[in-house]
Length: 237
DNA sequence: AACGAGTTCAACCGCACGGAT
DNA sequence: TATCCGTGCGGTTGAACTCGT
Image 1 (cartoon, rainbow, N blue to C red):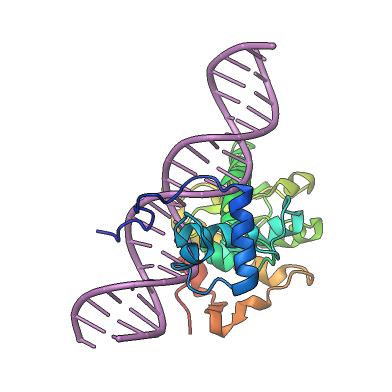
Image 2 (cartoon, protein in one colour; image 1 turned 30 degrees about the vertical axis):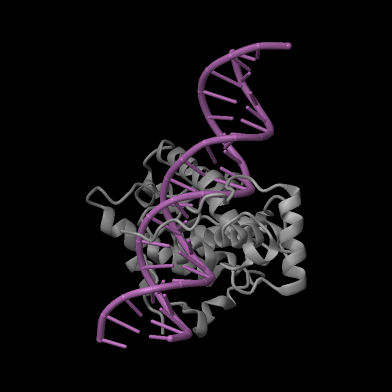
């Protein structure tokens, strides 16, 4: 049983924010800071719940928000980070200045997931010639040369491979075994392979990819190879 | 031009966590 | 220690928009 919805009170508005409401919220926070979100709506004169105000501010009104489409570099980073962190959108967002967890979550669910899965699907149907496939590790290297991310795993244990940029990287096809989910007999091997892939990918990635966050003890984002096989981030220190 | 299908994304909901008491 | 309360997070929804016919 959860807590009662914070917006149950009568008279509280829900739904899309109006420009006027935005102005009120921005003005108030600029002058007073947000302080307690719960009391903010009353103090600012908004007929919204604190939660709604916080969401509007953090996802849309904050001055440091970078709006507009994600750059290929940002997308690449999201894919990398998702392979490590899974659906921890806030943690991923913290590595992309100006981007919000909501934005990244939407990006993943609408663009990247489809793109990666369709690319996986395409690879599956391109034939099962394992011998013709590059190893995941070499793929990571070649993909890096091509400026794309190609292989990683999700917290679901589904190996995600093949970015849109891989299409242009000749010879960067993944083996089918690395693509199919873990339901068949090769699942454990696939998982291990993809785990190794993700690790290798991180190690191999070009220098302009700042992965220093992996060393942030205070944030528990300490890189630990175990997380790749456990598919979760449980090695916090 | 009209309509339906598909896609995007802002916003909501419920839960978990951590600090205060 | 137990409980309460505020906040943050991730999953989901649905209105608005885009595209194809």
